[in-house]
Image (cartoon, rainbow, N blue to C red):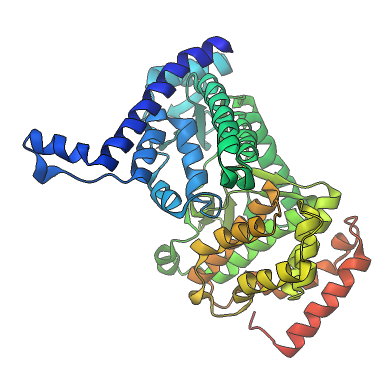
Length: 461
């Protein structure tokens, strides 16, 4: 381990020194003088501090690019200018050589691609920081995709995480904001997520679990790719190939005459079922991971590397949170959030609840177009920090996914409001929900309140 850190350390410290020098030179105006001296003043473009640090992360490679995306999606935890700049920090890397792809497959599966597949496309469909994906055809003619992990990526990530932990500890020592934001905790959550993404066997198990739940509840219109286990290891994942389009591609849905509202409702409710009954959920349903599959008239969930899980107590708290939210019971929302995370004993619950009402209430209106989704999650995070509440990772994941679904509703199903869907109430009265091990005494009062609200203020569902 020390050898990996020592070797990687040269790159990290050199690029850190480069970024600091660029930052200082830009602040002092000396960088502009250099461009003048070289006769290229007309080509000069100023660099902001945020742009310098984004470039620094991109030069450091996959681990830091992934963390840059965390910064981009968490402006409540990081300075707004930094989060805005890091939205440009895309997970785009050149593909690695076909020879390396073939060697990894031989090492993992014992045979060359030509022996395992009838066809294997040498040009990847996609290349990202951890893996790249190739199209292939099995011997029996089944179309699949083969996800191959980048060579030596695990060693680099292990070393990078060591430096990130060191940096987070230093930041917490020198910065009050870093301590309040729980910088070490952020890195630990990031490490947990990243290490899970490195193990393709875990991703395969997650897809199997999702499909098993769908089959158990006879939901045949929703699926994850079927895993071909005989061609899957921790570094190679072979799975069913989906043919369709992203959930936010409304133009394609319109062209094909697809009922986007019905499809979105089916997909969202299937996802919600996994949360409420099993404490298990897909933790990254951005548009690239949620597809409409027109040939099969199905909805496909992709990329199960990021998964949220709750134990029974946490699952009950999540159910109470969602129901309290739908019931507009802001004090119950506040109490549930505090129970899920941690908060100082002196917290003013009434003030916390009042702030939550200010933030959340717009999501319960039907005027979805007026909602600024990009600002919503940062506002929740800032509000929690204001009252000293630490939000657990999986709770943040839940909110992110609900916001994804609500954004799709805004685009594809204007009549559907994710946050007061009457299905949620109906579902809690089903035998499956009644047998899910939840404390129905606490939940029933919220259900009655929701029904009362829906009677007074019916929503067109």
